Length: 163
Image 1 (cartoon, rainbow, N blue to C red):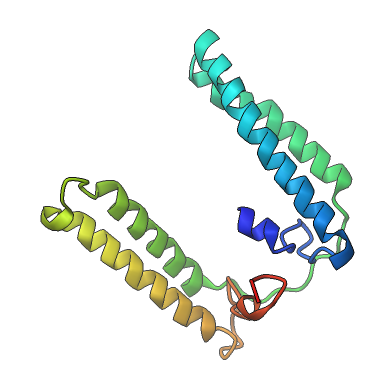
Image 2: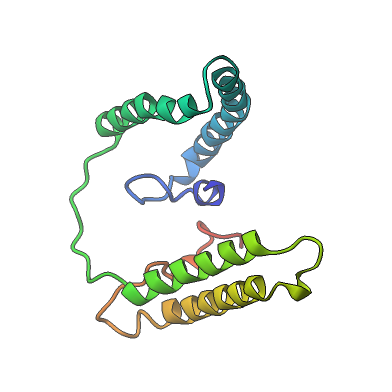
């Protein structure tokens, strides 16, 4: 999530932060992450020590309500843009790639993966699916019937990546 914020382009309205305000935006994000790194484990430890670990999940409900209410009142209302159809091949390939990597890494035997065939198969399938995803996204613009899930033009932008 942090790289999306660092690019300056992941606000709810998807417009990049103006250059003169980018430092303030990054400072706010860094401060939020810093506070969360201190308060999160502290409050989590209090919940698990005095109540139960189940209460950690219950505590997210009022927090989510507050965040949704704040977002509805502070986010600018923008008109919805007309979008093309979903990038189903891109979505499926990305999901399969991440699933393969996740299952392969969780089944990976730390004492020696040479004997763990399932982990190697999942990892290989995940990597192949992610490579296919990159190729599918690169060619999504050529097929005007769908819009890329992750436009590769952003990878060339100085705002979204390091130049």
